[in-house]
Image (cartoon, rainbow, N blue to C red; front, side, top):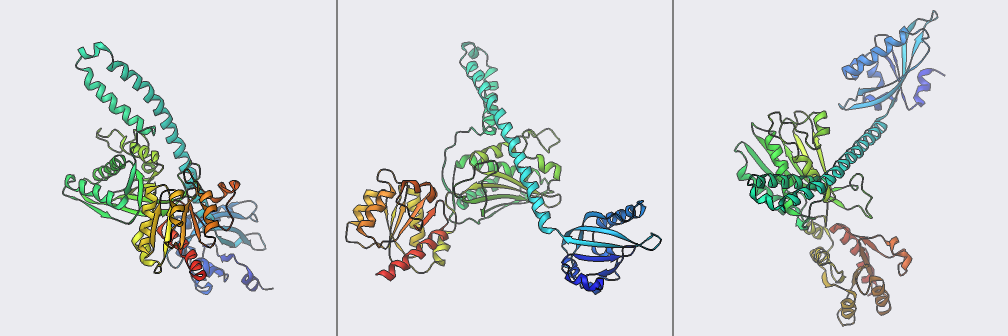
Length: 496
């Protein structure tokens, strides 16, 4: 069979090149790799289809093969070629020389395979490893800081309680400075006292931006780009506000000649933070970006930027603790601090926090089918009752909210209709399982949607749960709740 015909059946790209690396044959599979028909490739130099550094490497490999005593040995290497649409395609090449009767090279045959997927997997693996090492490094720093905090706090307390200390006025400012350092170390160790509450992300970030604008230089513009409408986080607003102020100050210092700083919020589906045990149901994450239009960071600086006492300032004004402290605060909230930056393209410092509730409630209601009917909502958490009621009412449903099972059973004993029961399974007192058993006897055709912070399997051993019982794990988005409700309400309508 002719070689050209046989190559039609091979998925890998096969090329023949002369000793000047000019393509003299290309198999049909080359079109997917180069984006150019094989006949158009023939006669063109390889230099036209790959970056200069890759072409230089190909020439070096060819020269090395020609210089070998045994010229029949093949070469295995990786290169990048340029697709017609401009993107670079990583390829694995297996090549060997074509020899004449005297054993002299006259050409080269190359079999190339697109390894884009493999390269992406390798890159992701390297990033995960880098994140793991970063987590271990910060954990070691936190452990060390925690030990130092205990020792210094004991010394400071002893000094303050010493009767002779009052006789030395110069000790007071030293004690204050020591207290500040202890507070910083406490933050690095993740041992700050947090005063958490639910915070609307977009409203909170807008307030931070409004407070910072008057104190920024005139040559800096601070923009707010909301993108997490209806989403809340459970945080200490003073601490997270301090993180954002610190990041904005960092961006300000990176742009002495002026520029733009943008505070942008968003939602992201993400896995738990590196090094943490996986959550029962990974929640959506809230992102708060602090972007600047400065010069950006090189790779070496980017890798060390979160390290304690590392600073890019050369004038001695930076202690190198600001970003490390921000990282400690975010980590204590169960989140992480990410850095994206390239020289000449500015920097983005991203605060990633687990959401309390995520999504645009109003938009979810507008997207939902027009609702009709009554939902009995039973949950002991006031915030969850308010959140669910807002979502369901936005879709046109009537909501009756109860904080425990006894109140719910009392309502069901009355004459008012109920079309769906939204039931927390981990209720205090009369638990959800008992409530469901009694309701099933009273109203066997009433649809029930269980909402819980734990998976169905964790309660299965206690009984009362069928494998087909509708179950929604907290936290959930407005769209997820409405989708689950829509699946149950039509069934009820058909029965009535």
